[in-house]
Length: 289
Image 1: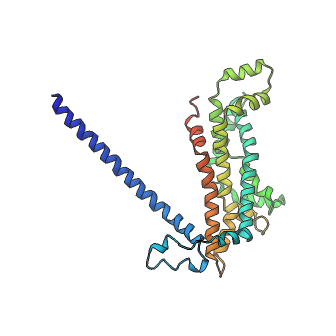
Image 2: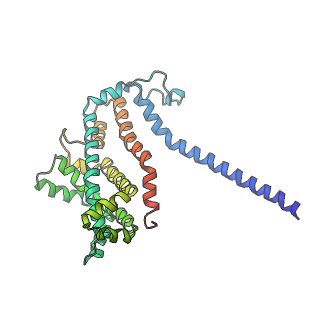
Image 3: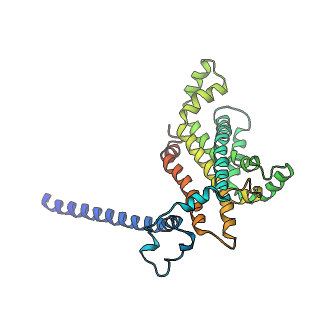
């Protein structure tokens, strides 16, 4: 009987290995298909704009590779309006993360650690706030900001992003998992609520803070409708809007446009890759500590 089971186990392991290899190859092919448009954009950002569509019909190896790469498009980008718009996007996104993390963390701490009447109802409003698409309220909100003279100001571009309901939800869920004994020990040591927040909750919540900061950054970096409504002059225009405006011109330098597209993609991609383990940890450990 043992001799009969051994071949069956060997065949079963062989089928599992074959299935694993097949799935790996399929995943690699799908990943390559998603990568090809980005790679084509990157290659064309290293070519003069006049050569962008020279190798599309018919497809050939020069379509996806170039033997004479140049950084002229990126150098031109630094001195163009697109370069300033990307710098504006970076400033707005980083400022939103810095201010938004402070506000969202304090709000999450109050909703998780400080007992007060109506806390559940207030948290329900926070939940509702991120279930409503921001684009649905952006036009009336833009009218309100114009009445406050906040159009074409960095304050007007930053304000809607600093209070993010999803970030508050994530941080509150993580804060609820912090043992209450630590809070009681802090109270016995004479700490107030601010001291407990600063000395206990913040140091223990690094993964959650990084994950929430990533959300805030991506919310501002990829925003289009709100910057289109609020940043209409050349000084306050943001990267996605400037890139879209370039496509509507009669004479388009596709090399510079593709270079700007790569920069707008690489910056958040690098941040996501660098912070992904903290983001995954913040989600997977919420409610488990």
